[in-house]
Amino acid sequence: MDALIIEGPARLKGSVSISGSKNTALPLLFTSLLFDREVTFSNVPRLWDIETTLKLLETMGVTSHWDKEQGEISIMPTVIHKVAPYEWVRRMRAGILALGPLVARYGEAKVSLPGGCAIGARPVNYHLEAMRKMGVSVEVEEGYVKARLKGSLKGAHISFPQVTVTGTENLLILAAVAEGNSVIENAAREPEVVALGELLIRCGARMSGLGTSLIEVQGSTTLRHPEGKIVIPSDRIETGTWISIAAATRSELILQNVEIDQMGSVIRAFESMGVRFHLMAESRALRVEPADHYHPVDIETAPYPGFPTDMQAQLLTALCLAEGKSRVRENIFENRFMHVAELHRMGARITIHENEAIVEGPVTLQGAPIMATDLRASASLVVAGLCAQGRTKISRIYHLDRGYQRLDRKLNQVGAHIERVKEDS
Ligand code: EPU
Image 1: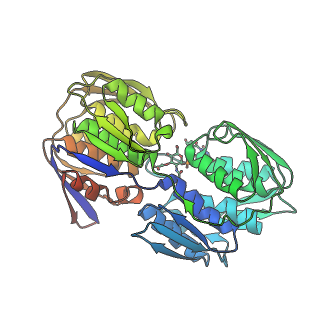
Image 2: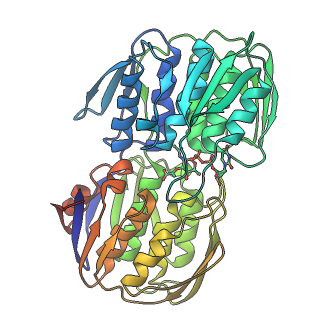
Image 3: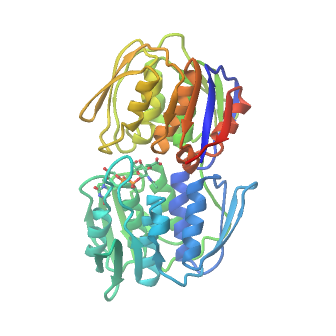
């Protein structure tokens, strides 16, 4: 297993290119199961979760070619087994995204239940209840969701009790091919859902309301092959993570390939701390300017366009530098403060009351041996290690590699001192 050794404090300078979006690439790769010819994706990030997705698809009989240097993946979706096994889904919850495309195309699927993870229980009951409403028989047996279509897939009126990103994604695919119209109420408005909807529209699907919480889908579409490459947009959470790095290390950085329209709530949060942003004339580049003094903030996570739960840990770390008491409420996942115990080991003053973290600052974090527990927690610990005095060793860094393309290399290119070492598991 790899660990990172970070020598802090880092002072960074230069520009960084943001990679393709993980949470857009994953549903789009699974969507290739809908087609009968090769589908090609570009700007695909080089991540473990992408590797896991291709391995999972391989167990179904699908072949793929990944040109890692070019960031291109071609998938030949020849499905033999309509099964997503536990072995792969347990490594990456997004495996549940195989369910919608398999049922839409073949009328059946057996997909392992993902189980909980370090950030919460993460059930998939909303996906399953919505599918039942569309006429799919869904049983959970021996840890697997067994879905089989009885007759034809029927459009339905679905109202999600809570916003679910992957739930909306699975449903959009099913609704596009179902007989009749569907309405998805309380749909996720995330850019990742919009990207999937736009791909379906490119393939002939008819829908309105993408990017709003009410999506109407006119079904009965035989989806045609997308033709041409499917380009993955850049990652809004990686962009936010770099904003947090710039703020915490008080470094001016230029971020390139930014989807600026998707960054509103993150930019507003860091602006209220005192960070300044300049959109540069050069297309899609954002200059991030730190400040000498930061203000505390009061913020809560919410579905898009609210402040993303996937940025909560990275913001929390930067808030250790703010002068005063900040409050951060986590409203999406019940157990997403695992990074706090590690930050305590570095001298942070954070208390947790139910779903609220109170951060008292400013503190100068001290380097320490710490442990990564999940993907975004790992990113927040990298932010902490970069602004801490002395040496930080972060173990179990594989979590980071699931969702950030070569973060340590990118950091070293702008002046950080990070070494990747092997350690016993
Ligand atoms: N929920 C249920 N039942 C369901 C579905 C969701 O109770 O059937 C609950 C969840 O437990 C959670 C809330 O609803 O409390 C929202 O969960 P959601 O379904 O939106 O999460 P997800 O689709 O599993 C995606 C991202 C996550 C991101 C969340 C929230 C992908 C592959 N994953 O997960 O990304 O945190 O939306 O925005 O798109 C990450 O990248 O680090 C990550 C965890």
